[in-house]
Length: 276
Image (cartoon, rainbow, N blue to C red; front, side, top):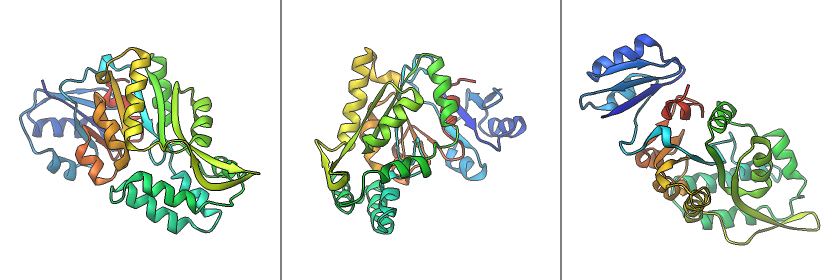
């Protein structure tokens, strides 16, 4: 049976009913979202253009009640910024670094190459500038804390994986009570960044492997995991999950993902999981 979740700040009971009627489906209003079932085939792309709400078909083989793990990307997904761009801003290099970041997220250049190019530009930056980025610029995306608190209370484990840096993922792990994190390690000497990363780069394949590893540690199936991302380097990870969520993502990611949130905050994940 096809299940469609409709949600967003502008959604009303009346609007949900109107969309259900156009889909020839039955609408169940759930306060923060609407569930539409028994629909006829319809062009959802037209409805998405017509209504400023998120309209998503849930994967047929994903059981929302059986979800046991949520794996998130960090930059521009869990948080509002791209950390490396903000670090570069302290060296007056943000435009150059941001341009490389954007190209990588669109999938125009491979992530590993883009990361090496960007980190090289950070050589000589005092390490304590990373604290300034965290304290002055890093903000969680809308709905993040509500989503995490709700799923954690339900016993769902939470994980953060990033092509960014452990400096930030470590802080967020402690702050948000996350079970697992993985990211890149910025090399530094005598209090200054060297322009290199230590160890293997956490890129697209590493993110996918991270999700698989988390599932193994929890003794669950990949089908019980949700993966959330916004850039091209999240695609391999998202393909491994039972449900993938493109969060305000690049077009290439939205096309590949099972579901997409463009109007909701991260609390929209709760609607996709059919949790109040």
